Amino acid sequence: MKSLAVLCSALLVLALPFVFRRPAPEGSWKKGDPELVIISPHSEAIRYEFGRAFSEWHEDLYGKPVRVEWRVIGGTSEITRYLKSESQHAFKAWWKRNGAEWPSGGTRALTQAYFDAEGAEPELLELRKLFRETDDASAFSTGIDLFFGGGTYDHGNAWKQGISVIPWEGGLPDRLRLSSGGRELLPVGLSGERWRGEGYYGTALSTFGIVANLDRIQDLGVEEAPDHWRDLSDPRYRGQLGLADPTKSGSMTKAFEMMIHQQCSEAVAAAGFSQEDVDRFEANLELAPQAYHDALSQGWIEGLRLVRLIGANARYFTDSASKVAIDVSTGNAAVGLAIDFYGRYQAEHQRDPSGQERMSYVTPQGGSSVSADPISLLRGAPNRSIAVRFIEYSLGEGQRLWNFAPGTPGGPERYALRRLPLRRDLYPSEDPVMRLVFEETAASNVDDLSHPRINPYVLAEEFSYRGRWTGRLFRFHRHFIRASCMDAGEELRAAWAAIQEAGGAEAVPEAMDALMAMPPGLDWKAAHGPAYGREHRMSYMRDWVIFFRAQYRKAQKLAEAAMEASPNA
Image (cartoon, rainbow, N blue to C red; front, side, top):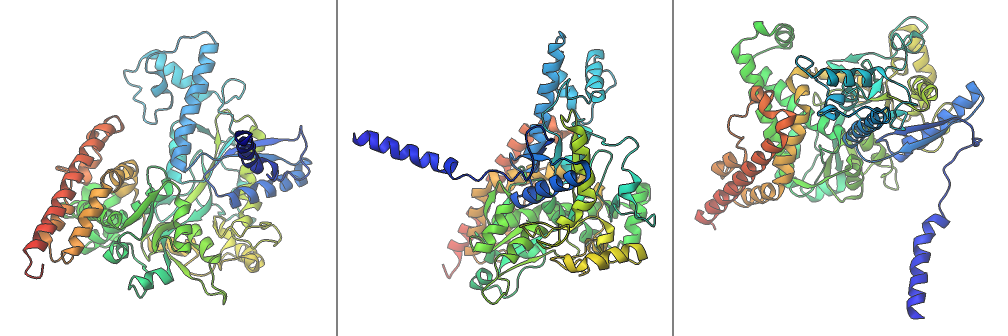
């Protein structure tokens, strides 16, 4: 009898979430009305507001609401891996249903971004060609219509792999792209960053920066909130820094890339090269002296060393980039890396009773480019026409959701999203048509989009992004950080602690040299070489982890030996 009572209680506990679960808001939607399936790393607030607002917009224009089904499986990188796998399986099943035998090497050839057609088997070429020429849900489909959110790197990869397709013949329509005065509303990019490509379209803009809990950093003896990437290597933050796993989050890989890129820029400037010199050399590398290449490579090495010092202060590496800002706001971490809107959103919701923010967010000056969160139409979208309308909405009326206050016309219903829209006419402009739109909408914004520390079109001018420097090493960086700061993280933090206990970096230079050592033969040029290609990842990752663990143990022993030899020990 007692066991039965325990079992019933357990079943009741399990049933409670289902009993009290609130159904997803569907408005006037009924069975038979349009549906849309979107995979996204976006927050619940963004999903709610865009799903609701698009359904209302669609009903106003086309007479029927739309039920949006959101697929949430993790970060952007996990999404792209999932879409690639699902696309391959769907096409393979269709191929076999037609009675054809699957060729050896077919799966890899299907979505390989850089496929070497020269010398490839004819059947592989035919397979790849058929996959990329077929956009028909009745043939094969992932069952998902849109990929919404994340970074341009992952959306660009989805396009190169054939997973996404162009929504409109002839590209982005002028009715979306141009103002009534013929000015560009949705720029291709700025300051070296690309905001849209053939198969993806930026919807919101982001910078990367630092969040700090103002009470917690004072407890640590830090008087002012950090405002430069290097500030995060301050040993006072040891065990207090929140970070996200770059292999799970494309946005965090981008944040780390910003640190590395800034070090490259500073090294080139320190070597005596002006921005005009850099522009000239990057336009024609044959004009660049060896000293320029050397400075770039040295800056890149210093960037990787800075990342490792920051990793040495890590409290954790979480799978979710949004967790960092939340933990800093509650004091579970003192400082952290965050995308701008995560930082501003949490700062907004963590004010003290007087209205004062207890948490700060800052984009380091000259420390971050302005990147875009795109949207992509997936191959074989089962609800293609509705998906294209969602893209149109997100590039048009939906832009107002990003930063309008809840309850304002065209704005969100419940949540202040506090994101930066991409449309140029929502910011100050000398163009009279655009300026009029800005003046009409400015009062609805939560954040002042005219402020120079918020306006992405101003921030972009402070940072010239050179994709050749770091962009091509995006995947390399995430694996390097994984090996040096996470897989060897325990040894890294132990060595860093021993160095601080021995008096700090200046007191034990040999230990610091061991801590900051790089794998033999690794420099900027080598990182682009075939030894670090995708097919060798398991090999070089293993070698890196072995190397870093050994170096960190060596650094710890050197620091401990120096401390024992000290007369004050």
